[in-house]
Image (cartoon, rainbow, N blue to C red; front, side, top):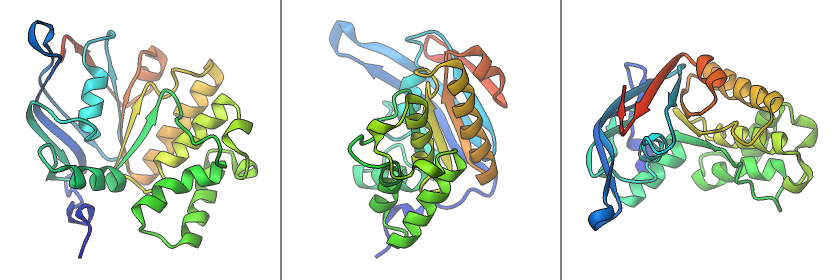
Length: 236
């Protein structure tokens, strides 16, 4: 029996991610807030889009919806041409594992495991590759982010910049169609911010992935292919 993620087609148009008319409310009663107000958006393979705007404008809420970590109150989300916004938890989980990679401001590594083991974790969960192939791919990804000599170091033995580079390699582990990044350089100094951004975008472009990142860093935003500004729950 095929797993749910195998049912998602590859988009002929190059559009990996599309949302239409997204609405999201948070809170209840008098504290209920209309966070997203009919947002529409699309991301194409090989392109990097920055979403910018003041705190509280809805950027991170949108990213969580696009990553199928939350569900909209109204509107539609398509991943690789398949409508996923109203799918059940099993289908959404499978789609995330197969088609979406995440990089957050904090690396969220399992610090008691090695860099190699951290990168292999998404592959183990997806179960698409044999163990030797998983290890070879994890090695190659760590080489690509400049950590080939530190594959067996524990998370606690890596610097902050190195930990975030492991997180980039981990996000690419299952060759996702989409990379979603929420302030991926927000916890790093200027040198490491530039390095992580360069790695994230170069590797994604080489592999034909759509990259959507939320950032407050104007220098990072200016280096993206496109910038979309949000304010009060809408693009402006």
